[in-house]
Image (cartoon, rainbow, N blue to C red; front, side):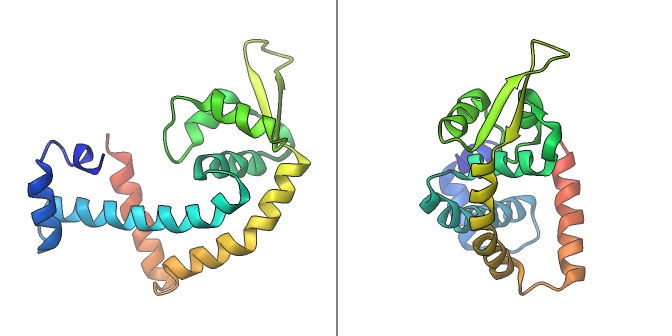
Length: 162
């Protein structure tokens, strides 16, 4: 998949470039970004997976936790996801089967379903918070606050381009 993201470059070319980075061309930057993102993703997965959920499921729980009592429409959950997923309904089905979320039809628009974090889902997030906080500090602890702000700004610029 990484090779697909690298705009059609043959995998052998990407591998050569990844092993001898000069830091001056776009390919070097993309490879470094993808490698860093994959390392962060693997570390985060090691925290949540022992609790029987995936990173995407954890992302949904966090989205619903932020919404509190308002409820979030299914399509809005999909739009807020870190990683795009075509199967958000299946993702929600799995979380509902585990009693981590609840859903019901929107009373104002019967075409929509609203989603809420359940008390069981809130307890799971509570259990995960210390480990996720520790993991975040481990990943970014060597960066100063200013460097973190610069990183966010740069990633926002990259993420806004489509």
